[in-house]
View 1 (cartoon, rainbow, N blue to C red):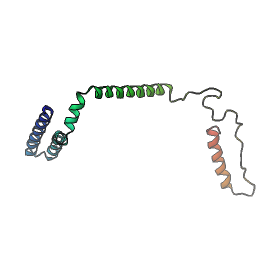
View 2: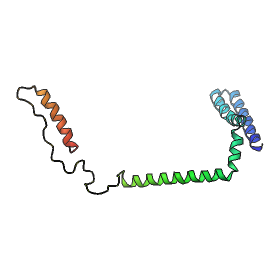
View 3: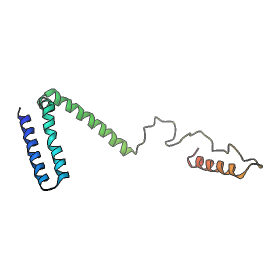
Length: 137
C-alpha cells in the first residue's frame, strides 16, 4: 500500500514538472519527462510494484539473488583468467603450441602451369601459394 502511494506521488510530481516544461515551450523535454513520470503509475496499475515488494521481503528471493550473484562471480572470474592467459586454451600435451600440423612436410606446389597455358592461371596459383605459405600450410 505504501509503495503504491509513493509511486503515484512520484508520477503526479513528474507530470507537474512536465506541465511546467510545456508552459515554458520546451515540448520535447516535457514529453520525455511525462513519459518517465507515467512509468511508476503503470507499474502500480499492472501489479508489478506489489510483486516487487513481496519479493523484497522474501528470504527465498534473497537467497536466489545470492546464487545468481555467485554464478556471475564465477563467470567473471573465468573470463578474467581467460583474458590473462591471452585466450589460449589448455593443451593436453604432445604437440607444439600453435602448430597447425606438427608432422606435416613443407608445402609443395600442387599444380604447375603448363607451358602452353595462359599466364593468368599461373598468377592465380602463385597468389594462393603465397597465402598458404603465410599461414604455414
